[in-house]
Image 1 (cartoon, rainbow, N blue to C red):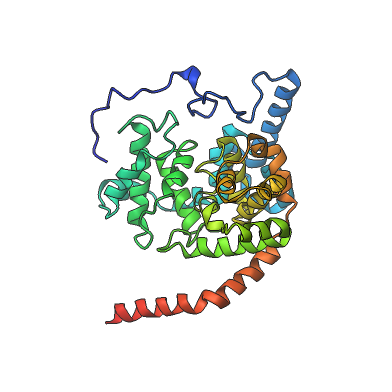
Image 2: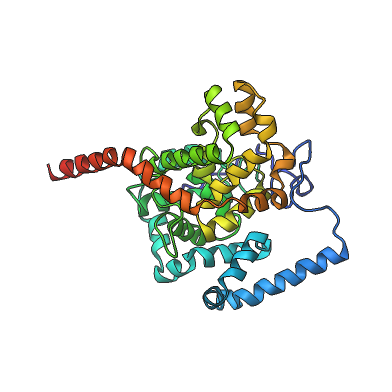
Length: 358
């Protein structure tokens, strides 16, 4: 991105006007997941937790793989309780395998940023100002945050030309850049979309978002099975999951959900995969079930896009989410979806191959 003179008219919030994550504080201060004054006991607990995590990952992550092999259930339990914020960037890289990708590809990111051109550059520039607009790092037009975001998105659009750039990827890269360098964030995006340890977002941003359509089909069926009364009400009011759930899957709750909750979901998402998105979605609907079943269409749409603050408490919502057992049913619903839509996908694929041959 061409460096330009900083627009001095942009007002960056004073340090006292941002929350602990760097977002501008709202008039009505919603809880940001931490009490303003911690007791000595709470502080000691946090320090003890931090020491456990440091021992688990080792210096620079040297012990991580060994620990995961030896005690996977301990790792899973600790991740579900939340990764300490000071270690989050490093742990995300270790969980995803992106650190290995970076070490195996020295100089590749710099090559992509400096020497390659992307067909998506104008689209990326257009969308950058819409990504976390209330965060101090991204508020300054052409400032360091926006430049870093542009570089990561441009580099990925060149690296994976089949996907290129899709709106929504900005929130993915923008979240990662708050916890790591440009190059680290780029390789984590690669790990998510192309795979390292696993690829929890592989295929998500392909043209037409076919995987999102599959996820919404699966979610709708799960919701109706777990909450038949709500499912019936949604049918009566002609509500379908694309009206409220698409962004849950496209940005893994980073688009419009409170940041402290999004982080906790991302901790689990990187380790356990997309099933946590289904579980959190189900937990939200279950938590608000009794109110939702009474609402008419307009109010229902608003409620599904604006959940109450008490529903956004990770210590309440996430244990409820973990109680949903969805893995087996998701696989069954995936096969059912592919029976219905697979032939269409195959014919499109064959069409494309014929065009390439021609």
